[in-house]
Image 1: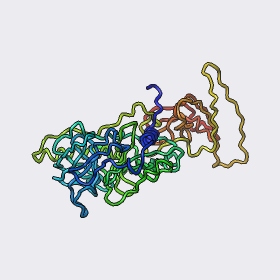
Image 2: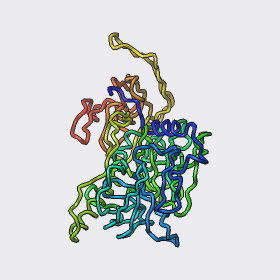
Image 3: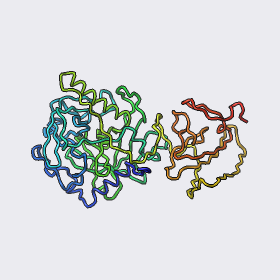
Image 4: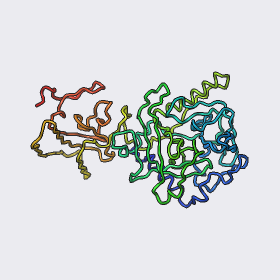
Length: 431
């Protein structure tokens, strides 16, 4: 696909609205028409989520006795490999617990948990359970978004364009997601916040308690989607939060609170979950169990989706437009490269003080690329700057940038962190 325009946020919304069209939240929400006992689990063929790929990877039942509920329905979880489930650490499974999955044709699949590994530090409410054997092909492994998913999130939704906190609440285009609960009801929420914390893993080789990405959800404002709302209650911990990409559910997090939980697809969380998988395998093998599986998380393929942020950022900040930009004019009629382009303007500074600054910049930008990026200060917001400053990243689709400023910094020579240089006048030669 030469010019992909699909976005995961837009696709999940359109896919969910399409799936509930003609369905009733009163009769078509439950994944199971009989959810009274493990031996009688029967999938609800009328459920709006019945035909989704990945839906069988949600743990349907378990025998863990917790909180005075011997039925064991109060623990959530999902299959993230053929031999591993993920769950909430504070509502976790134990060795020799049994988990149950149900195929589309109502075949009950039983697996015993032979080992567990919880996130060993604070700020990581998840754990991994190792199953006694691989799940059959009739039970889906639920895929996740890649660990650099932030690159596919609309830059304009990041708070002030300058933090790792993506804000969906209050935006023009709401992002719909679905989730289950202890009764296996497939309900709908709006993704209100994803706090990535950082766009890099602060310690790729070890567990760390910092930079745990989280999500928040709230009730949708869409008149149809909000009929499918469900507010979580105690006992719903570990229930999966899912995006819907066309007809496939994608695991993006687990609830550990009423409307919040860890977001899986950030570099730190993603790496640590894979590390938990590796460690639980190694520990079990070292204790005389079967050999390590070599399994890891499976990414949903986003190659046909639009990348808002083409650079893999190394700083905890993004930029849509510079925070210091006080005025922006976009001329959308376009120009042809076969003609000369002439820019002309006059400006005057009156009654200025030594601390006053005035800059004027003009950009020629590819109109087929969303207008994002652009920095501040001596980089014109176009040329790109030091790798540690994201607001000095280049303008997306930039062709040409011209700038004038009262302090003369646009014309200075400069050496960047990667040792490349920009030709210009030395500081001593500035007037």
